[in-house]
Image (tube, rainbow, N blue to C red; front, side, top):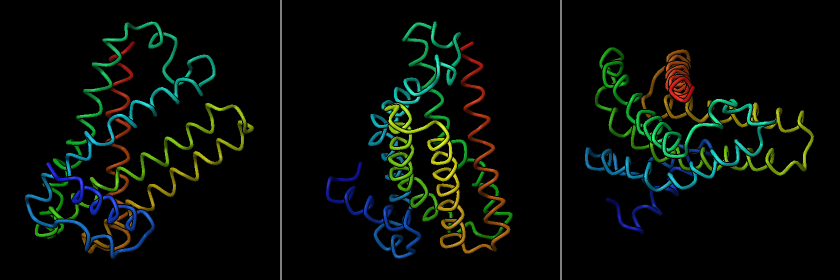
Length: 198
């Protein structure tokens, strides 16, 4: 587990990458140890993920985001499914990419890529929580929040594209393909989670 000073350094690097600044990689540990340490970010930002889920349920019209059936589920079941979904979401893409980087002849960049990818989840989650808070507050027109959500999603996808380009050193098209795979995989995991709560 990284110490407080290390975590601050890694998060600073992630913030730079989130702003499309490739110098952020210099603040990360590109070693195998740094790769494993980066998964501690999942625990670090887990409380914010819980806040995000609560904000989304508050901001949804009559619980449409989770569905009436989900809203009626006992808390322990919702917590169990969301925890499983969260963990699977953190490990599925690295497993897929472990094969893909070999196909792309980028295996030597795998560890530094996922070190950057994992730590970049922190600022991305902050962005999503901020947008969800805007919707939950009810202070903004629905259309405005919809536009904000789309813009934040496009920005987040842009960051993932930038990471693939800057860290894996692949072409624009290949970077876009990696982002599509990541996005579709996350949608699949989320969809299965919703099905488990029906």
